[in-house]
Image (cartoon, rainbow over all chains, first blue to last red; front, side, top):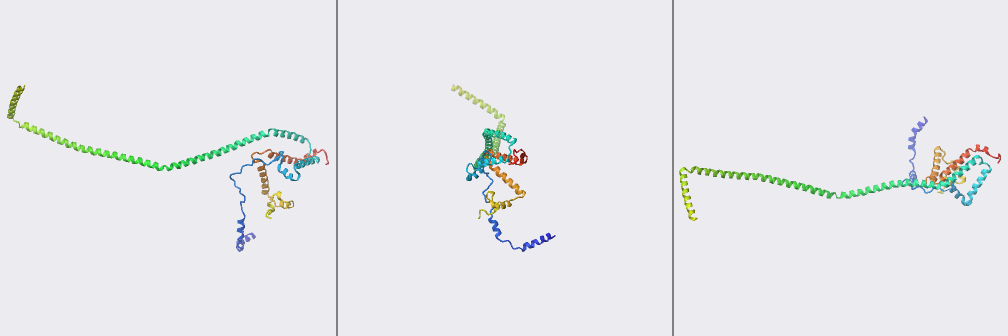
Amino acid sequence: MLSRLVLRAAPAALRALPPPPVAVGVLHATRQLHTTQQSLAPLPPLPEKGGEVRHGLIPEEFFQFLYPKTGVTGPYMLGTGLLLYLLSKEIYVINHETVASACILTVIIYGIKRFGPDVAAFADKLNEEKMAKALAVKNEAIENLQAAIEEEKKEQWRVEGRSYLFDAKRNNVAMLLEANYRERLMMVYNEVKKRLDYQVAMQTLKRQKEQDYMIQWVEKNVVQSITPQQQKESIAKCILDLKALSKGAHAAV
Amino acid sequence: LPAAVFLKDLKLMDVKLGQLPSWLAMRDFTPGGIAGAFRRGYDRYYNKYINVKKGGLGGISMVLAGYVVLSYIWSYSHIKHDRRRKYH
């Protein structure tokens, strides 16, 4: 109930507050968000070797930490003293487990000393193969992309020859049109010649027919006009002529 | 002093001995904070000793040695009975 009262009073109270000072914006601007130069890609490469560890158990930093005050043997003296203290106060108790752990540790250390380098080389080889495969994939991808770039450039160069292509095509089309036009011209010429020849043939035929008919008609009329009287006279005349001719021939011989 | 502005931004190795209690009191003890502390510790150890190209034996052997010591501490009350002398 009282909270509702407060909530209703809140906007009025907020409005009653003085406006926030301008310095607030300035304070926000001066606080930088990303001060380091970090960026996630490309990832930085893995470090080559891990932190140094001495005797496989104690990091090197411990020895460096004690070096200024105690020199080189400092940590070892510390270790010996600590061990003697643990043994004498029996904080570390020697029982059957000690013997067991001693045997196990001997075997482990012997195994590591003997097979360590071989296992390390094998693991390194596996890593190398993985890296080589990844690198091969990446190189192949890069080569493919470069080949694609070359192809693209070539295509762009080919595009420049478009104008020649279109010129050749235009020439082809023009030639086709020309050939077609000439063919049709020839056809028209032939057709017209045929018709004209026909007319000429018709005229010659007609004239020939007329000539023949006229000759025939003349002959017919002439033959009709030769009366039998004329025919006898002509035959007698022919005989007389022939006789004369034969006389002439006899005389020549 | 621009170097030591905020006590809680200092790392543990930079805190002076007298400031240690106040520094501890300012740490984040919520469950999220504790989980974050474990995560940061794990990440630091992992990136220093294991996530490298040629990791050595020290990486896991330190973890195993720590496990051995921890298990010895946890079972000390049982091992106490194997002591040879009662008074030291």
